[in-house]
Length: 229
Image (cartoon, rainbow, N blue to C red):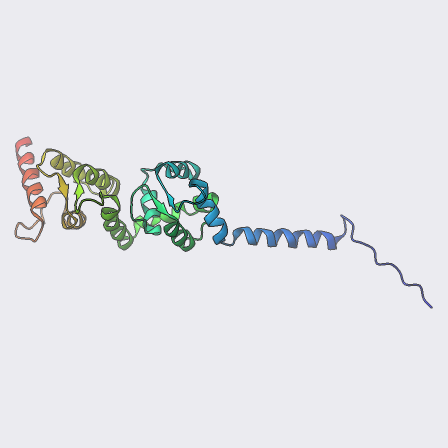
């Protein structure tokens, strides 16, 4: 009867052992790259107490520090829009989970890798308009129907400051005006005005359906131009 040889165990140099290690590493890497709801919730609670369902200003500051973004950076507005957050400075667990699931982020490093994607949404006119409109309800005091003028100036600077040649003049106009609040109709029309009216106002129609706020801005701007020329 022939003697059966014992099957040798793979050694560290054995190709079978190396293949198994590579396979295990690949699988572990895939699992880490897959989105995990459990990991996402655990990440949320790094900025809250375990039994809290709202991430507040203190946690938000640490969150921004962790991802390397200033709280005033416009990318935070883009993220809030993706999460459909209802109040500035706060994320609920439900908002966090819904939005982070959509962008497939369950860790700091994954979100850092998506920041450029979030910024790029501002280059799309439709997305920009949606983010601009969202910003009004997001930033205004929920006890008021309109946005106070100081908040409006800050948000307009964030959204239009680098893109609208007349923003500096409009900001000056608001500073010296009687306006204490900006309503939603005015807010939406400011964007349309910045997109459709030329910097020299040559295509501005006095009989157009612009809010009085913008009619007054044009009048103020032209008066200041004629005085300085």
